[in-house]
Image: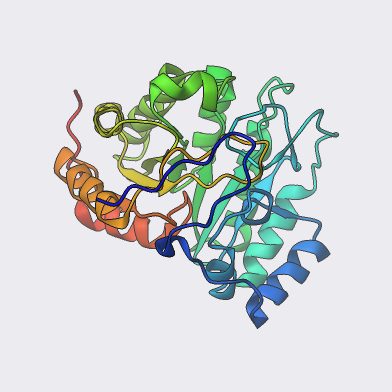
Length: 310
């Protein structure tokens, strides 16, 4: 497989491989959605995290809403979202998100957030109210929430689950060895516990109907065996859906790319993941957590429950 050399810390960004070319934003739907988000005073992770798929997704009429403001209480080494002291909670945000979902006519809505570690519930109540607000306006829209870890507290997680999302996502992001560097305020074991709690809740309360999902970035210095072991851990803790994508450095202040992973390697992990027991694996250089999110849900539900717990 071709190996692309890493970016040196502080060095100018190197030219990316051809397989990392994404559609440039700017079509009519992109402009329409930009105006809609600004008119409703909403944030999207597509913009805040510099997602490379924003042109494709917005032009097709899909977006991932980011609630709880646009300032995060954590400073992860990979993330472009602003960090600092967040402002007051916006209690009108859930209804505005629901308004946008209705105007866009979304069949599948994805809701994520910044971390709000200063709040006792980590913002779980706003997540829950956003789910309920969308349900009131768009009862047939499937809802995916990409949540923070709530510092490992079970109460906030239960609050979100009881609002009834169709898919509960919490990203693992990287292998355990790299957590201190990549996610210094997170804990690998905490992530696995959250996913397992969500799966058990789904099995008990929905008969396994609610799907559990996670995602991992590649290219931060992990080894192939570390990737495979992380995948095995996720299956063992009840994860149905997995996304694997290439880490792209947002700015020179963020962690450098250690390796650009070629498409063939991503495809190999996809095949291995399905053999491990995931219902669906979305794996490719430009894959992000919400990329083809509705298609992931449809495929995972069609695949049936094949996960075995370790």
